[in-house]
Image (cartoon, rainbow, N blue to C red; front, side):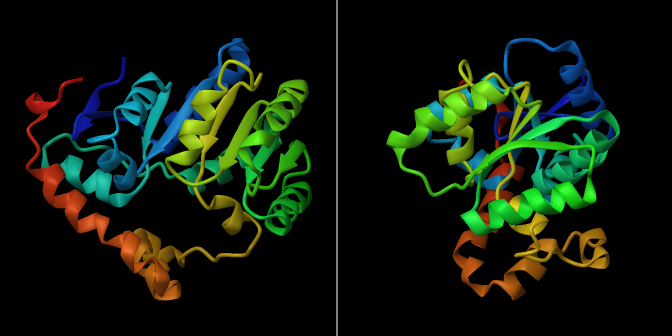
Amino acid sequence: MKQVVKIMGIPFPKITMDETLDKLSRVIEQNNSELYHVVTGNPEIVMACQHDRQLRSIIDEAGLITADGIGIVMVSQIRGGSLPERVTGCDLLFKLLEEGNKKSWSFYLLGADEATSKKSAEVIAQTYPNVSVVGRHHGYFKPEEDLEIVNEIQSLAPDFLIVALGAPYAERWIHKYKDDLNARVAIGVGGSLDVLAGKVKRAPQLWQKLHMEWLYRLMKQPSRWRRQLILPRFAWKAIFYRESNSSN
């Protein structure tokens, strides 16, 4: 069992991107009937888990939690745990597509608007020709449409179910239907389909290397400022959090 670092009670394994890919490759090869839920854990999810017991139980039951954001990694370093690197939903999606192109994996895309969903499937077909997008559905569906979508995913049995419904809604949706989806791995990836489709541009490599991608996104999308307010709150609480206070 890999060592873990607890951030406000949430156990993050000390795992790199390459190790994550290797782990998920083995999950696909093992072909287990049980869905493997990957949570890309960002500060918002960690903070929400402090008062949302249902979400916390979902996170506790997940197969893998990755460090989605430099804030998670930096807090781990300050607290002496030192997670090796970020494993964000967006980066992981692109890595899975690259690996899937070598291994002929299949994907189902759930989320974003219809135009973005369609464009994402087209980009995958052009860039990763050996990857199969066996199905897709936009994210603007009503609760009464859930079962129709679940039945479609079940019949298509994708290797990977990519859920771009936003956190923590994606995590709740995956968990609610995990016994019926008939996918090997399900991952919530936030707005990654927007990036894949070219609707939203990622920060240049230099900004990413400096761990300032959040600032670049804020400059490009000033409307995100309210959402970004959680970052300093998370950092303060997480650094001084006493893990023994966790009831889980």
